[in-house]
Image (cartoon, rainbow, N blue to C red; front, side, top):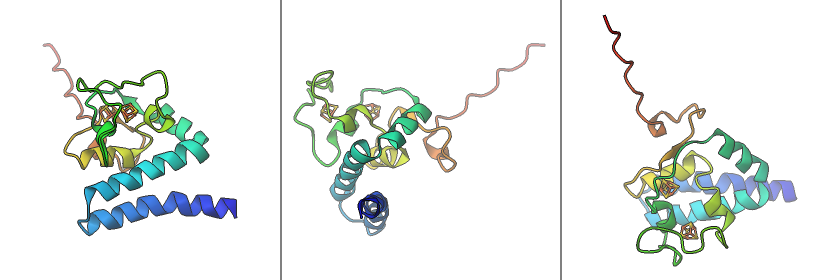
Length: 138
Ligand code: SF4
Ligand code: SF4
């Protein structure tokens, strides 16, 4: 029963998010689903979260976009710093982004997270552009 509940909870948010996006429904609803998904993952799928964080590359640009998904977090300061950083910051914030669905959530706001997942097979659009090879000196 517990396993089934986990599977349902894991599959519904992603699937529903895609359906909702496809129907052109509210961005806030997609972001709410993302919040619930992350809450579920950091609570019940900690191994997955650890693995994803190990795979993750890039850096936080401190754009604050992940703090304004669905609603603007009351702990977000005007300079885009987190007022509770290092104190009570929720695990879902500490772990963000967990996977490319979180990157998609940020992209939906018109921004781009500084992190990416280089090993994701379908993650071409989130990886930073490749640098051109330096020209050989002759
Ligand atoms: S969206 Fe990404 S880059 Fe921006 S603050 Fe959040 S984690 Fe950092
Ligand atoms: S608690 Fe901090 S890191 Fe989390 S959403 Fe709010 S401002 Fe952002």
